[in-house]
Image (cartoon, rainbow, N blue to C red; front, side):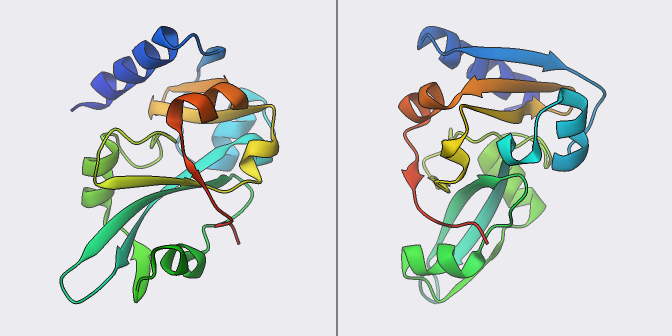
Length: 161
């Protein structure tokens, strides 16, 4: 799936579910702080999305789409403990992009892959709206948090450090 297909799928899902959102077009940017400045939102309102690989055994791995406020880091120890794993680390860019169906810097706070478990830190959900790149470096969304939770149905756990 190309990034434009993922973008189109997301917009279709949000429209179908009646979500309240705004689209921002901006210069191509994937870094959270820089793109937040382009959009005019605080970094705390940005959804930073990281694909984490957790080893559960010698041959068993699970992948988590960890979503934290833009001013925080993913606590790999917390993600590892959540799944009862023996190791947690960042997924390779190739694996992250395949599972997220978009390039690094544009990963959505939604999972469209059954191999990717969505986990969101509760601090992000305290914001009335969340902001994120929408599977494209030149497009972002502002999405009402209540609508995000209803549509994405994330597991909510403290995973930000």
